[in-house]
Amino acid sequence: MEGYDKLAALMTGDKGLSIFRSFKRLNAKNLLYLQAEIAIKEKELIEIAKEDRESKDADREKYSSSVRFMKGFVEDQPSEQWEKWLQVRELLEKYNTAIAQQAQLLRYKPPHRRDLKIFRQWLSDNSVWSTPAECQQWFGGPDGENARDLVTLSGRYDNVDSLTRWVFRAFVPFWHKHVLGFYYWLVGSKKTGDIEMGTVYYNDEKIVRFTRVTSTITSSVIPATSMLALYLIENMILRLIIIIVYNIGFSIIIGLLAKARRVEVFAASTAFAAVQVAFITNFPRD
Image: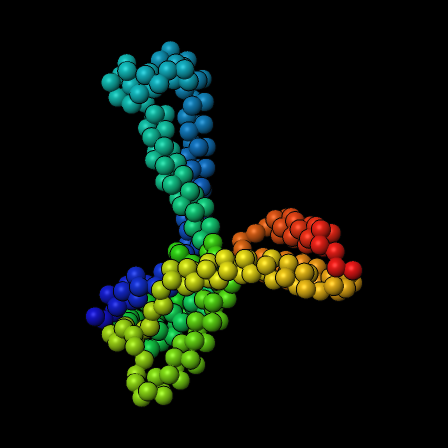
């Protein structure tokens, strides 16, 4: 497998590497050209419509109120105004399609710097293209425009919490490079992976599942350890300190482990503090 076949296989295997150029400048220029063409045709159409209204011709004067007459009901051939309308309609269809596509294109996010680094490293290690222009598609280009023009179709970090993003960005590379690297060095074995593609894949779904389990366990342990600490400590001042410390820690952890808004974090922290206060009220030790 060589060339674009190999590159397509890489993108298929890792959705985070589905990185393409958006050609925003060319698309914007295309919209501007279409807009200018429509503006010119619009002016011509207005002038033709004015001539028809002021023509003193009974049939032409009806064009403004009868599409049937404009289409050539009487003369068996379309009028000049109708032909101009058809030209405008064709341009409008192209313009409306292009502007909707451009709006969608602008919603795509740029690739994460780590994914882009891995992708470029793979491209540098694998000869894919035959021409310089193709080679520069994912790199800087003459003025650096290409790098700013890149978008990803399916970012692995979308709709995940901060813990999952940290696992993707930091833990997985550290695990692969240092932990697994040391293990394979220790046993005298080579790293496993796709030999043809020169890559090692980690299942995104399994990583997300692992972080969800971690979040669930953490959310259960924090309240339980808080109640245990408050029960074992007799001094009220220390109890209040424990409440403050746990509440700060709870807020930080909720912000990291859950995709929660600030108001939701605030509400959860307030409720957690209220539970702790109720606990020490019902179980006084002094």
